[in-house]
Length: 178
Image (cartoon, rainbow, N blue to C red; front, side, top):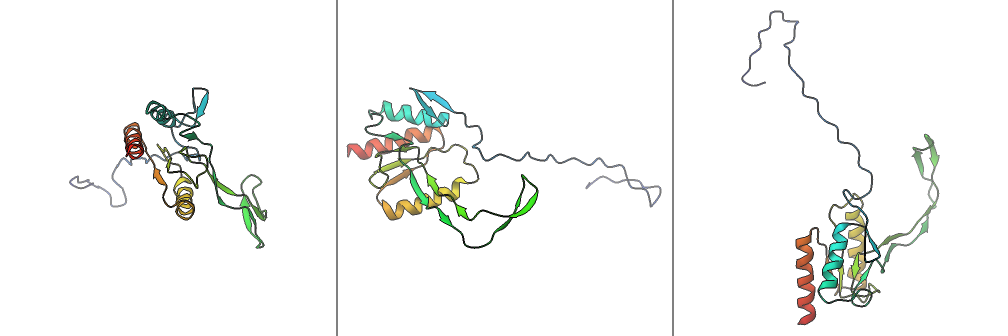
């Protein structure tokens, strides 16, 4: 509006100004954006980035299900528990305000690639993450807390593109050779 002057004949009359409509972003679901499941070597990967990491690990001389594992290890971050408090919550499906159930399911974390099937004995863990969803930072923070208590010497790699996957492989192979 700066620099333009409007001639108003009548004080009650407003100038003709085009109002730019702002575009509303569609709400995202809780799935990872742009991730497509891929089948390679009879293994279903959650994304193309995971498939690329698998190929790089295999091409570096490591053997699948011997030197590295894909989504075999999992960690229970929070055990299931029962709440004694009353919790009233809006149920969107029934559009009513009801008391929620008192049992809470466990929270688990499954890293993409591990050096050992037991995460407490693994030397390295790789979590490929292209576009993380809303729940990933909190879940990953809890995983890092669990790992710091149960396996403080384990290294975590979180590559987000193919170049970083290649750098990760170089770091792991240099560590093994030295």
